[in-house]
Figure 1 (cartoon, rainbow, N blue to C red):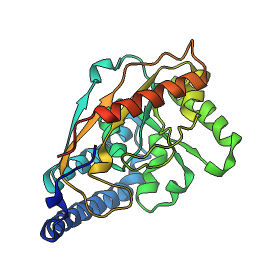
Figure 2: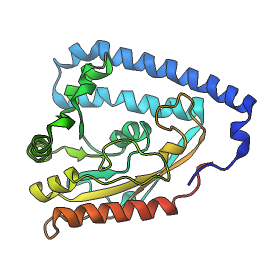
Figure 3: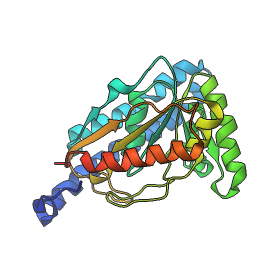
Length: 253
């Protein structure tokens, strides 16, 4: 649900939000550069230590968004999660914010992401340490096979895997086609799936400089078993749950 407070668009309010957002971006850039500079040292450490150190980056940015920009969050449905069994997370994608929060909530996580991100200075240098599933989106069937085979490998290693079924950031209130990659991985690997709905795009919209204050709600659905469902059924169950849940989330204020 969208913010309805008209005062958020008052020129003085926008000026204040712009100032706060500038402070955030300075902090964000600083911690990102620092993370990139220490990356060569991390390659010398055990994998579990690497991951714990790199988690400081999202934790710091979530904290910075809270104290500087007034962006808070609440989590519903975490009782649905069985942390003794790693699984596949299929969240909707509205913002950069959820890519910061989710690693702080779940154990060691591998992301499905586009390979071009590796080329981003500082940020991209550390990505290989997170054991992601880097794909070439233009590769078609080959990319899907990579998601399936490398995804299962990561799951078998004990990682959780996170895939955005929409494939790209989608504005609040807009519906997009749910791609089959996550459902195909679930069917191939037989690991369970958790659908996740959130409204982070109300505070951190795509390609916007200004961050708006508010309480983001993250809702985690019940586990979906992948043993007795087809990929189409899994994908449809995730889509229906997320789209319905988004209509129930409290307004961001």
